[in-house]
Amino acid sequence: MSDRFRARLIAIGFLALVFVAAPAALTAFGKSYYWQVADLALIFALLAGSMHLVTGVAGLLQLGHAAFYGVGAYAAALLATKAGLSLAFTLPLAGLSAATIAVLVALPTMRLVSIYFAVATLAIGQMLYLIMLNWVEVTKGPNGIMLFSGMKFAGLDLSRPLPTYLVVAATVCVSLFVLHRLSHSYYGNALRALREDDQCADAMGVDTVRLKIEAFGVSGFFAGVAGALWAHTAGFISPPDFSFQTSILILAMVVVGGLGSLPGAVLGAFILILLPEALRPFGDFRNIAVGVVLFASILFVPKGLIGEVSALDFARRQLAGAWRRDGAGAEIGWR
Amino acid sequence: MDFYLQQLAIGLSVGMTYALIAIGFTLIFGVLNVVNFAHGEVYTIGAFAGLLVVTTFAPPLLAVLLAVLAVGAFVGVGLERLAFRPFRRFSDEASLKSRAMRESTLMSSLALSIIAREALEIAFGSRFQSVPVAAMINQPIALGPVTITNGDLIILGVAALMLIGLQYVLRHTQVGLSIRAVSNNPLGAKYVGVDVDRTIVWTFAVGSMLGAVAGVLVGFYYGAIFANMGFTPGVKAFVAMVMGGLSSIPGAVVCALLLGVCESLSTAFVSSVWSDMVAYGFLIVTLIFFPRGIFGGARERV
Image 1: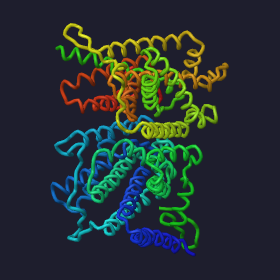
Image 2: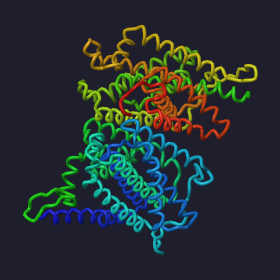
Image 3: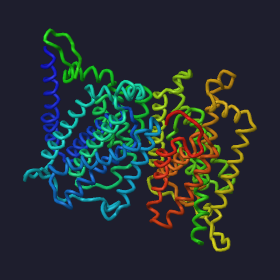
Image 4: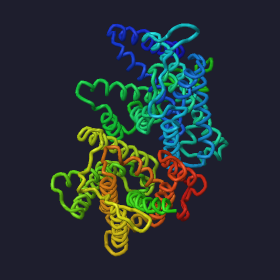
């Protein structure tokens, strides 16, 4: 079986799972609540994927990711309610506004390393959270914003569960594909180089500051897109959705799945969203489950469920998206 | 003018509680070179322990404080066991300074802080627990034009006493000597016969005692105790520690007082909901312009 053929097969299988099997199962269950959980799991898979680029691949511990998610959600909600824009415009605009803020944040803080960077992002995340909570004239403060219009695209009404799910799944799949190409390529390798030793990478000609800012901006963009998806699917956003706890939840997803591994981040997101839902009959243990899963995974599987090495191997050989052979079958590297 | 004096007094007592928490951060960062993210939960647990003692026995304040000290020490030792010791399998220089060790303890303390907070919320509910009126420390005292409460004085007094006690422990006891030795150079201390693991346990016990007392004092001052109360003071104490230069205790105390006063004076100009911005703004400015802290000495890259 050729590499390309196997890669196509895996991709088709994955898409069939997301676009055929999952909606079929959800329709069979028929509860709208399950649709919301599925949307939420996909949105968090995108959030975990975007944090994976900054924290896993580029090695910058990010403790304020939920704030960029919030910026995207508020941008989408305000554009939809005040300007009456539809999803086709709010989605990219929300991503761009989150990316702009991420780059503005990144410019002064990129000199910092390790824990100092983590604390700076924590502080900035909290500042943005305070703005969402207290700038009542624009964000309506703790009351949050309602989106009555629902999801619309090119005149089609997408507010029923199935179309909403398909829109969310398509956006998340496209975004994850971009993140996959970014993290499993020469570009991703340059980011990994500055994670391992940024001074060494600098000496070898990698423009570390530019790369860090780009990675931060791209990660902010996709967090903003996830925020827009959340605003449109939930129809109601309020500041607690974007607090420090959410940042930690996203970080836990990335750590549980494996730092530096994109399939791991997606798997971690599914586990940490679906596990608390599965535990719901036994009482309200959703948040404590996050802590327990995070602690157990650091203690017992410190490399994560899908470690970085196996994730890279999978991406390069099985997906073949970044691995090329020349005509004679010799491996010529990946680009 | 009176208003400013009033806010100054409040700011000093708030700053003192930040100082007590910040010292715990500073001590632990000194010996292990890692950040203990569960320190804010030690503060919360201290407040809940004080509340339980007061509601069951109604003893005088001094007895409550002693009980909370004991609880704090216990929590600190347990925290070190669960979140830090399992990741300290090797004690050579490279792994003591390695990023993997630093990040795994950071995550494990974060995980434990989530577990502690949520467990408290399940046990007590997410609503404010109110402190019995008799146990609260907010009787007003008129001092000329300014009205302060006895809580302000108690917080200042207890914090000052604990700071003096801490200086005594660090300067004049065997434990303090070994804490200073380990924070100066862990490997060197090991070579001259200091039991590093024991010293780390002691450091956690001492740091957590200070944090727990801060929690119970603030809880009784405002009369409201809740599972999430440790987060904001924890972040502010962390800011004070970074501003003070990470391993300098006097620096952390001065910056904590500065932070408390600035925050409480800021309410004169903006609505009090924005006063948390002061701390985050200070942190960003410090990290960008004084990355070594205002009182810090030379240090590796930050």
